[in-house]
Length: 364
Image (cartoon, rainbow, N blue to C red; front, side, top):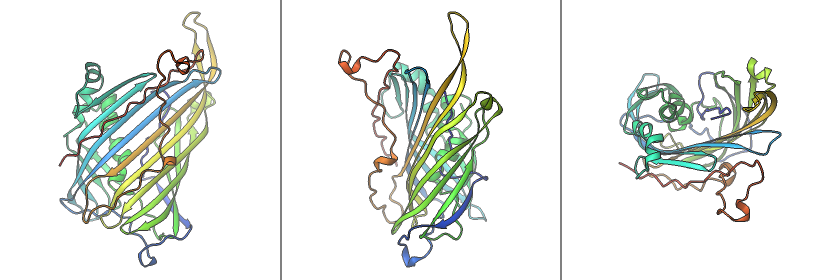
């Protein structure tokens, strides 16, 4: 996939830092501190649906055509606490009970569902790695705040790109981080305050990315606390990116978490990250062999929605629908062939096909 995606979830690595600041007053029990720490009990099981969408669109700025690719996943995940350590952390067993993967390139889409009937093309492109990911226990160790320390048992077929997109340590330990905990607690912050978290991603070909989010405890209705998230992404270009005059022209992070303080687990986590990066690239004409430098734009979007589907200790209060401003823009469905809307402008990119994914079936 062309472009760059910062695959950081909501739980930070060791280089995450948090600081507190005053915000609007929120109502909490006894006007005290809301407990945002996870609660781990040996034998405890929780189940979640995890939906991840990544989209990259690249375009030469002197042309109208946009090359679009999407990779969407819907996963049914179960976690079980196996043991506790002296510091309050835990060792967990994590199992994917079902996987649905959709790959979209231009106006072509391929979907594979481990619980459904799939065609030959889907079997060949996505079947092996999707089946390899399910019913395979992974071991995840976390600290007392739910920050992932290590992931093991997920190396089978891990050298294949599609497998990495499903069972890679970055996916389990970062994109799925909210199923283990918030990963950081704003020390000293109460329900009437906000906190800022800064995280850095490992340096890559494009450079080093730094994410800064402001988190606000916006509402408390026992046992749930709602945390609103807003932020931006900054880029420190690599030497190669500097030679290409790379710059980030736009970025946005929005999200929301609903934390169950009674059960010490997230009832829902929504995270959307968008970036636009421009850089000079060398384009070679296949007919003449001549090269010229053009300005290219890459727009990337990462959306992660996690929802808890077990009933916990005393039942989970119903959740409101995810707000529209948090959801990603859906790809347009192409018009019927022959209709006026179906006739593209010269050089325009074909619209991607939006494929409605069937719901995964709950399993015990």
